[in-house]
Amino acid sequence: MNRFNQYVNDLFVWNEQMRHFLHSEQVEQDAELWQQLDEFTELIENVNQELSTEQLLSLQAKVEHIHEKMENYFARKQGQGVGTIWTEAPKLSPGEHTLPKLPYAYHALEPYISEEIMRLHHDKHHRSYVDGLNNAERSLKKARETKDFSLIKHWSRELAFHGSGHYLHTIFWHNMNPHGGGQPKGLLQDEINRYFGSFAAFKHQFSEAAKQVEGSGWALLVWSPMAGHLEILQSERHMQLTQWTTVPLLVLDVWEHAYYLQYKNNRAEYINNWWNVVYWHNVEMRLEKALDNTPGI
Image (tube, rainbow, N blue to C red; front, side, top):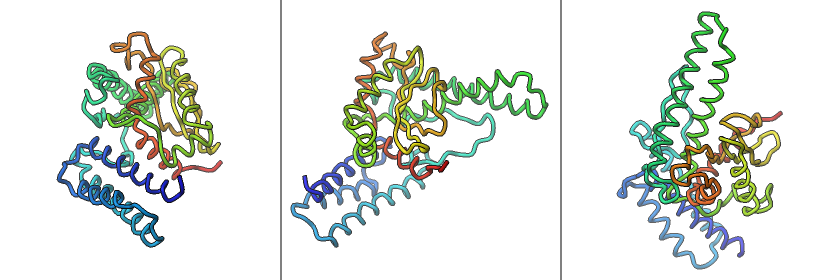
């Protein structure tokens, strides 16, 4: 495939990813964004020969225009409960964390993850981490005010456990989508191939890491700003065996509460089916954000 054909193919992939994203965010079908994508679809479907440099620049400008429209649309809708392409983290006071809404319906990931599991996992387990984090932050705030740090070891552990549980689950929900599956494209695909050699090699290592987590924990694809490459880590519980400064991009929860009701003790089957709902577009956006904020040593 020559570079021009590859470019047009990438445009088709991007267009499809944007459509999946709008579906996941439940954007009304008559919204201007859908009209923009319909026009863009018609435009690229009519490309049947190599374009001039000027025509390619015009096509790229259209892509950038649609992306800007999306950013503006979700910025306006932020206060109405509609998601964003990328939302900056709020600055919270101690004990102000809240349970985030799922970015899709409870049943949306079936048959791979059941509605019953999603309700229990999100509404009960994730909420318990939010409550535990708030309690730890408030208790440490009180310790600072009273200068009584006799329980600092306990509350520091609670802070690490519940905080990590809350943050990892928040990433986990957005790493999945009913229109997920397949393979990554673009920058993420390039970085996977550069470090792991191929997507198949990455997927095999990630799956094995998830299967072999001792007890309860996670498998994580992270970006290491110090090393300048991706890496796969295991985490026992939520916070043990980590590497400092790494940025989680793709996380898989292998605590039993994530799969036992549906898969019993067959963790391997759960992991194999989970790949069908991985939302690579979200993972790539997380990588781009990580690269934008890469620190030096």
